[in-house]
Length: 199
Image 1 (cartoon, one colour):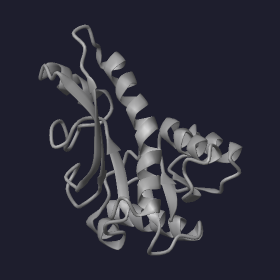
Image 2 (image 1 turned 90 degrees about the horizontal axis):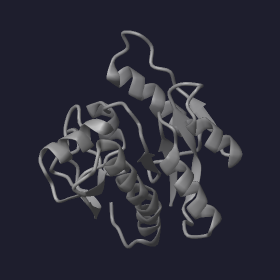
Image 3 (image 1 turned 45 degrees about the vertical axis):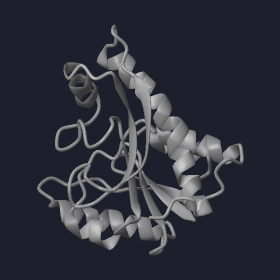
Image 4 (image 1 turned 90 degrees about the vertical axis):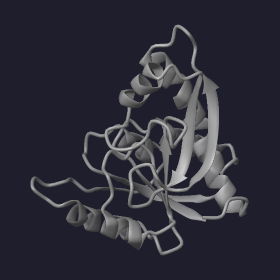
């Protein structure tokens, strides 16, 4: 199995994936990175790993589908085919229906809560952890899921939990959840590679 990473963030989970490859724990091949700006820290991770990367800036007034079509071209330029997995890691754009259909059942994403709770539009980053704490949840965690036309509504492939502590802040909870994300995203990719998980 081979995959392309989409990231518009720092790339901490991307780095965890690269580290898992170095340790031999992930044998699936990363074809490269697609990002949206030249100043994204995830680019440095790709460079350090000698991986190719493509920058696809969103232009003002551009439709989601037009942007996604250019992202799609960048993915293909990295050598992807219809069997390629699109691994979204901190990709801060909602995909158009066209992109979802083009890569149907091939796009995986991680959400920093236990879906279907605390998902949907506007639920990203600290907003998710704010909501978990406001709801007085006893546990949170990560949901690694397939992406569909909804927001955080695709089939969940794997969930892992962590406790919500009485003195948690959004920042302390986020840190605990991110550790799960870094541990389990590479493992899910390997489970797809081995056939243990079917997309």
